[in-house]
Image 1 (tube, rainbow, N blue to C red):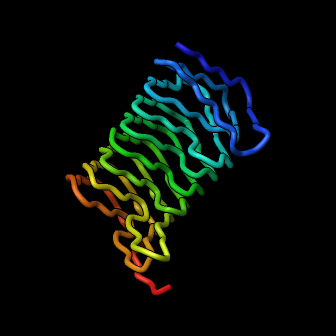
Image 2: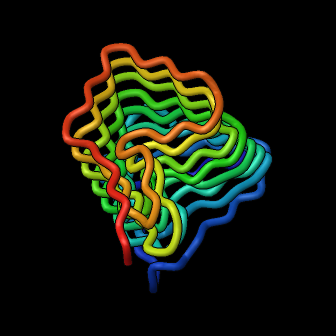
Amino acid sequence: QVVITLGGSLTGTDNARTITVSSKQISFNTANNVRMNIGFSFAGTTFNHQDGGTIEINGYQGSAFAADNSTVSLHDFVAVNTQSGLKGTNTVWVVQDSNFSNNQNAAVLSGGSLELRHVGISNNSSGSLDLSGTVLTGEALSFTKNIAADSRSNAAGGAIKTDAELKLINADFIANYASGSIAEGGAIYQNGGDMSLTSATFTGNYASARSF
């Protein structure tokens, strides 16, 4: 087991530094208000953010957390101005009490599952959740002003684009939109899988087909 402890903020010499960890199990501990411009990458790992502490990854030019064939648990995590907050293949993600804002994507995932609890996702510029074969479940979520735009082809799912099962409880979708030569699903675009929404609200979401 590898133990990572961050007692304070960590700044790389540029915004492209990555911490790559090779271990079957990672225990991650942070103090409060830890800020960094460095991402994490691992594979075949169980990564557990221990109780207590908060972390913000801001300005990183990649995916804040990149994980393949892993199990990842995060809490009190903020991803801002990154390429994506989460990225990976065949990984089980559990994220709570967190926020993704002003990234290209909140998450780009293939396979596995994503569970979100008490999470805000806003102002992401290339579609918020881009999921391929990833089961999505969540509770107490807000999706606000996320954009899926493509000037050359179709744009779909300002807040969520998925082809797998989706089950959300208490979710708000506000002013999300898709814009492209073909545009579908201002808030949600689902192409396959079952959808279950309980106590969800949709306000001011739209898809706009445009000629460029």
